[in-house]
Image (tube, rainbow, N blue to C red; front, side, top):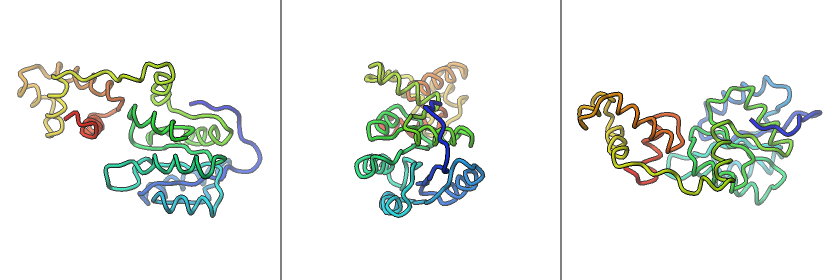
Length: 220
């Protein structure tokens, strides 16, 4: 996690944007225990968030990428709109999805940080402090993606093999590793090897996320 300088004095005015009320309440409950952060507003959609920013004047807006049940990432549009309308407000993406394309798009839209939701409270507060202070905040996995992109290595993601696509299709059908092995006449350990490669290539942490990202990209 990158942090440029600590923020002293007044608490950092922070706004939470997530379409799940329970997640917002849980996050607010955790952050309310932190003296360096003050949650001043919440929103569940892009339109509400833009209006709320005008009302509560936050220093940092913590944004989830998925703000509706559709296939698009409304949070990306919100990040871009906030950067255009309120360049002095820092945006920090806090999401479930660790996808190379999404990380790059979020940064290009104007996000100063990108962390996944398995981050603990201490790291989240550090990320808020970092972006509030004019710096950036990325968890190790997101940072690696950004560094690859900056160095020119992220322009051409490693392609999936035909065998990996076959396994992804079977994962999407809900088959276990054992059943996939039986279907493709390969050992269960070989299936696990291919799944690890799939997860690495798609930049995710779980097989369910791999299926989701692959379907979004039209790979299965």
